[in-house]
Every structure is written in structure tokens, then in C-alpha cells.
Length: 118
Image 1: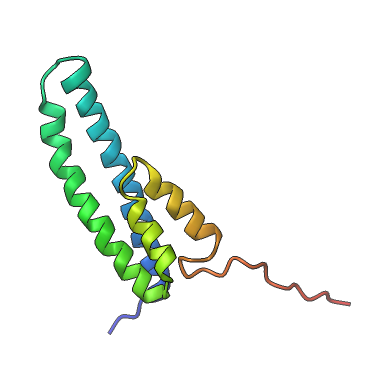
Image 2: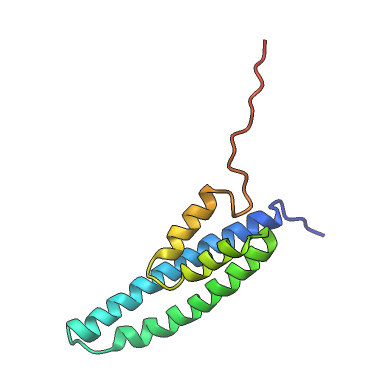
């Protein structure tokens, strides 16, 4: 029997961070594909490749957001912000940074008290 040294909250945080970053990268790929399709008139290959990738990662982000919201007991406002951040490009990373900074990913961000030795 093996035991994992990381806590469930740490795993949730790691998965959320990875999926938020992947969602932003897939947005970038899709935007580049749309540039080549609509602006450069170079075909729709990029959209055909990155469209399904982005769609899949988008759904994964929504599901992971709901999973983390439940496990860390986000309020409705925080959960809505997480879900809405998946719509504009790159906002999942902005939300992830904010959630990390404010301790919403289950990590206490308050500094620990250091005892002075005499």
C-alpha cells in the first residue's frame, strides 16, 4: 500500500493550475488559427486543429473549476468568476493567479509567525 505525500487540496490546486494554463494556451492556438484563416487568408487548418483542442480543454476547465469549487467550498461569486474567466482569452490564468493570491485554492497565504529564540 502506497501513500501519497500531497494533500487532496494540493492535488486540486495543481490540477486547477495546469488546466487553467492549458486553457489559456489553447485560446492562443485558436486565436493564431483564426488570424491565419480570416486575416492572412491562409486556410483554416489552425482552426481545425485548435478548435477541438480548445473545446476539450474548455470543458475540462469548467469541470475542474466545479470540482475545486466544491472541494474548497468556494462561494457562488468565486465559482461564477472561475466559470466566466473561461470565456475571454487568457482570463483563466488571471483568475488562477487571483485565487492563489487570495487563498481560494486551499492554500493559506498568511505568513506564519516565527518564534524568536533567546
